[in-house]
Image 1 (cartoon, rainbow, N blue to C red):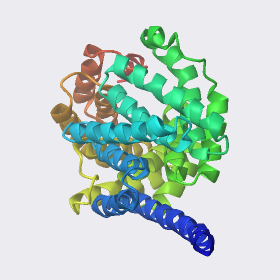
Image 2 (cartoon, helix red, strand yellow):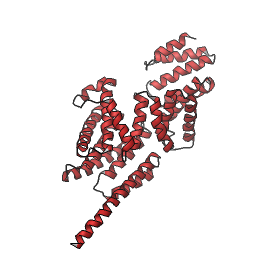
Image 3 (cartoon, helix red, strand yellow):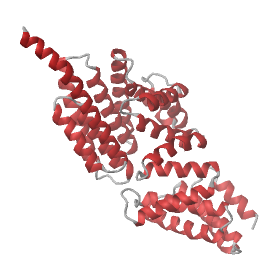
Image 4 (cartoon, rainbow, N blue to C red):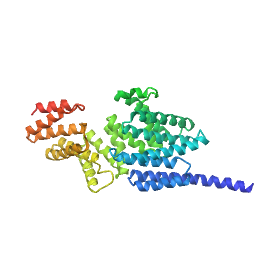
Length: 374
């Protein structure tokens, strides 16, 4: 009897200690990961796994780690196989748990999260059927986990992302509507509120939630003030993270804060020259040169604008086989700055190139307008 009491008392102390140590390891790993110290992050996640190899938790964060390797350089497919293998491992471990306890919301959440990130990569690679199927499976698992444990703010994050895009995607991409017929309808505003709740109160998902909020406000809502709030918070805390920096400096451009944008994008080029991880990818270098050229153009420094826009054009030729929006607008602004510098013949040549390409947004209208002013 005394032995049983002693065992119960010991468990009361050691189980919270295990949970505390585990959570501390995860938070430490996440901090390393967002600082782009990916090897150090993996060590922490492996330590979590070693505490309980039958729990899917640590394996899920290895999925997140592989996702960030992809996220830093989306054009590089070399990490895809490792990512998909990590997802399969989470599913296997979670299924073993659920076979013994079908109401284990922890296993449901991590399985749903891993499948959700897999759907994200499928969408990135334009495998729309697989992306839709993973989205459906992930949503179902999150809904089940939420019923069992409604207070889990990390589950709320997945539901929030779904609610936002389930309303947005059918309007923006009509060709995907047939894939979403069997899905519940979404609610953008509710989705944003759920993601904000996660950003404030989640145990592990605060940074991911702020990251997706900065992305949504920048790319879809065009609310550059809100985008700056979230991306600045992230970039201030994780200055080594190129994605956080990228969204912050894009927000500055959107707000017309061109001096801040110039300072920021120059820092990106400096980090790239120093070989900092993630800053020297061709796409980010192209983006830095494009926005430097654009910002210098708007501040009246046409010589500097021309220099960076020419570099953006050069990088576009290396990156893109087909016409793209950034390439079209690089040529458009090169036409503008050459016109300002007095080279009307060269300006006309650039405007004609824009008109020969597909129309991206209002690129043709702008080219015609500026060409008529020469």
